[in-house]
Image (cartoon, rainbow, N blue to C red; front, side, top):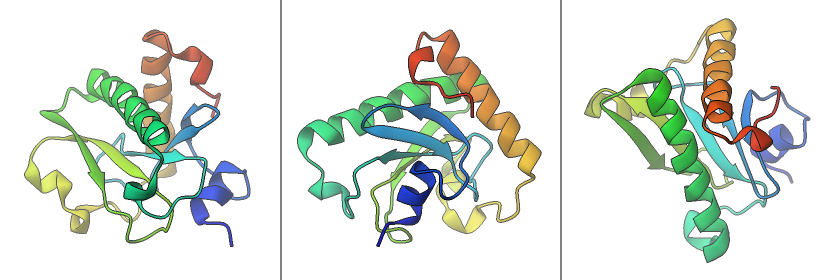
Length: 142
């Protein structure tokens, strides 16, 4: 059975995409730790990050770094956080988000009811920053 992320990737469920290439996609999470919190997800369904082939792992983290730089340019956080948890969805995903302090990394602090317009705004800002940085070929309209 396809994971929820595969259903988002295939368009069965909605997603606010900021990056799409042939191996990796990036979209906003619906329960952000902070505005601009995205998930970097390989198109291939792999349950555990340690099982990713080395070349795919390298691509996932390359894209995470690129999108992280865009997040940094928009929100100017103390750090851009990265977490791999993988307990909630059996499909590898890397959380990338603006972090002002260690409390930002606590998933008990997610916004369980973000305003859709805030998510749309965050996605638009990240897409604009990626385009400005020269990655427009990978930036979808939405």
